[in-house]
Amino acid sequence: MDDHPIVRRGLCSCLANYKHLLVVGEAGNGKEAITKAHDSRPDVVLMDIDMPKLDGLAATEVLARENPTSKVLMLCMHKDTPYALPIVRAGALGYISKEASPTELVEAIETVAAGNKFLGSTNALDASQRPKDKPPARGLSRREREVLTAVAEGFSNKEIASRLGVGVRTIETHRERIISKLKIHSTAGLTRFAISQGLISLSRDSGEEK
Image (cartoon, rainbow, N blue to C red; front, side, top):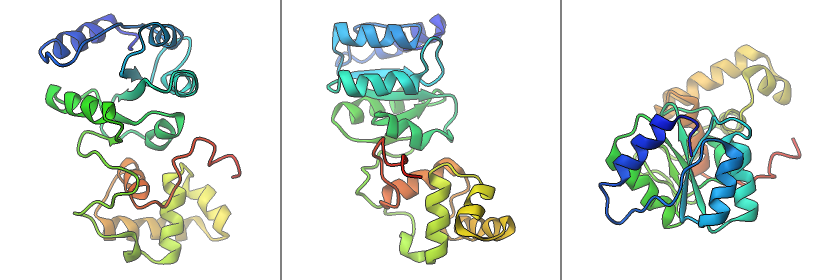
């Protein structure tokens, strides 16, 4: 589901090379995507995050509620999307960059079709799994875990400082230490790590009490 016809044609052409995958429909906006998904009941919906009439996040929320058997894989512009947590909370099982290779795209589709999460093109993690190649969260101090959790939930440094009752520079220092310890340099990467460590909930209503 993408608002650019040439992108949709490219995806269909790419997936046509894989005989075990069948494209049953396409749509150019969020409302049409919902209608097509209701009609064809696909196993996996490839949903662009930016679409007219109804964006990908809103369309995914509707599908997750009304057509839960169709699993959503979100298409993002770049690998390190700032929407990692909102995407999963909307009901999608994961996301993949439009920069990904056809092999990575098929891997993502297969992973999501099997009911597993695919968080970016570099790995497919279940929320209960800890990445084996990264230090565990217990390597962080209690305050660093608090800051990491807030970063993953989408709060700015200023908002985190206000929540914790400290200065913005203090939060910046904590973030620098977190990055240094985890060797993760992007917000999307930190979000994936926080999800994998169980530091934040993936429930769509988990942020309502903030």
